[in-house]
Image (cartoon, rainbow, N blue to C red):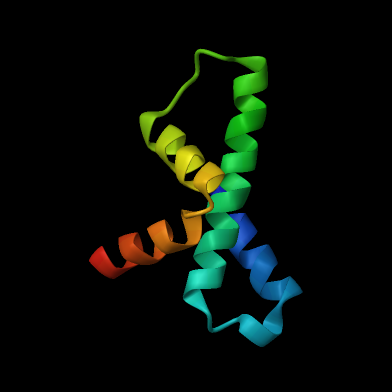
Length: 75
């Protein structure tokens, strides 16, 4: 959760021109979280999370942005 939140903040600071684009912020946070998750799995292969694994599948398919957009619409 911390990686997610900090990454969204870092994205907003690095890209102030899109600071009001919540979709872009969310995507940056999720992608950073997935990067951290993959690093954890390298060290601890059994530390799996079904939810994060699902997001990794979406990322591999190239459909992560649309998946996040649909998830945001349900919130």
